[in-house]
Image 1 (cartoon, helix red, strand yellow):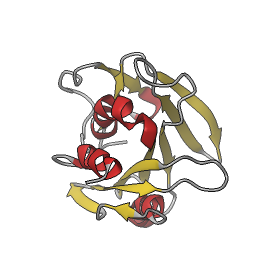
Image 2: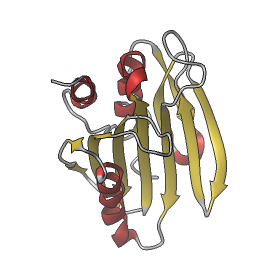
Image 3: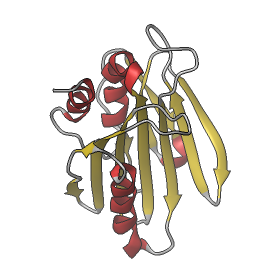
Image 4: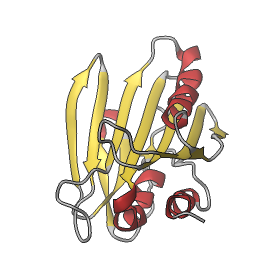
Length: 190
């Protein structure tokens, strides 16, 4: 099994879907992480200790947050990046389709990917997949991309996540990155 395939298998071990509805009453964070609250969208993420978290400027009514890995074994200029986007769609009936499209698009160019998983919990539909992207002529490194999306068909809320892990950084990023990717807690009334 290739190193990338092994890394992707670690990300998808157990349940790939990062479903945690109702941000209140959350459990203890995974080891090596702390809960980071994003009150504007009623979300908590398991932020690995020492990783850099920031909100990026909004664009077209889409709110964006970024997490960059940091710490032991991770280059100062890391090529790995986690991005969480939130938007509210006017057409609530389009929310689920957009969520699925986000995940499918993220792995469309993958040379190897897991099937898109889907889970429905009440009004929320979750999608997730992991793929391997090859390096390109523009200097983009070989990447593992983990994508997920949560769509609330009742409220029109759409949360999309894309986590790009540079293959060379995978051994250092994956252990805590997996907790970040899979431990999002969302209030299903948002």
